[in-house]
Length: 265
Image (tube, rainbow, N blue to C red; front, side, top):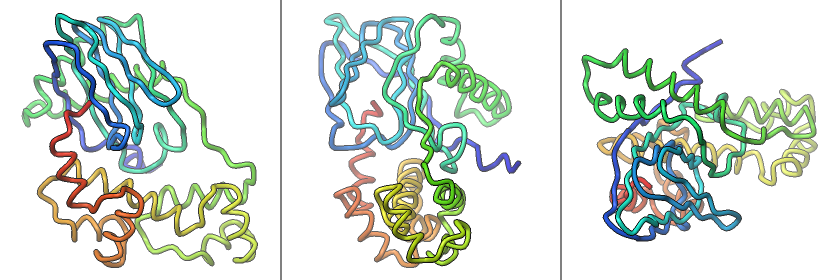
């Protein structure tokens, strides 16, 4: 197993607080990372089009990558929480190939010490091995409490192509190559892939590339758009900008500017 494919990236851990009730609307800005947050004071409501998740002191809430939501800080005397943000290098296990909803984890006050350690030490170079130990240990404990649905396509032949794309999307991949992996003719493969995923193979690959580009735009503010374009698997930065805007309704530069002002929650 190539363990680097399953590594976390773009890791941050910060404390956030509000002195009074307020609402933050991120329904038009899909979350650019996964988040676990431990509430230390007050109460939080995470509101999506389908559900409301209420989280009290001592509870942890999880917001998945690409979620659209509103966050309500509902305690009149103030709310605080410690939040761990991260991305995945590949769309593989444990967080890839799954559908998560915002949700809460209760009954684990002992996890707060790990959140506090990461908040205080994540930028200290000398503590990097201990930080990784705490980080992966905490994610392992929290992940075991999450509810999710695995994304499995009915046609196993198409699933092989999807799995291959999830691991190799940043490289040039032709429809003919994916058809061979699926043991189908190119025309038959194209039709079956769209029927199973709702996207053409190129659209699916571009979607993965854009998701990766978002992790780079968020995680490395100094990296140029041209560098991110190349690393994300696009043949030109012009094509990258066009695809990015069609998916995110903003240019990469506009998106980076908005996210830089993002309150992280």
